[in-house]
Length: 106
Image: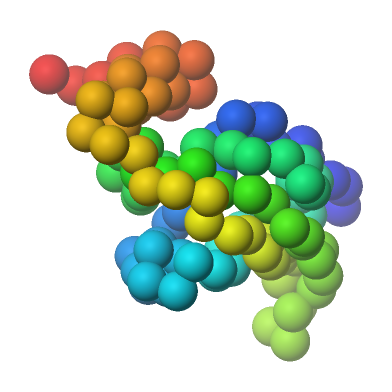
């Protein structure tokens, strides 16, 4: 048991429903496995499960807990700052592959 620190510039969703709620309502949450530390108050780039940069979000809080199934999980609450345009998305996606996700398959 221990906390893992997230990259300060990456907020990667694993669930399309979480992305939809954020983009539709301007607020949302994401659930991650394990205990993690997120940079509360910081703006970060949000990525889809396919590693596509889609928005700038502000982390407003997180809770690390053991759920009813006995799993360590972290719920991250965020606000949508703004959606990225096509060019911004392409550039941020390319940079993320170079820095965090590894090489893209062409």
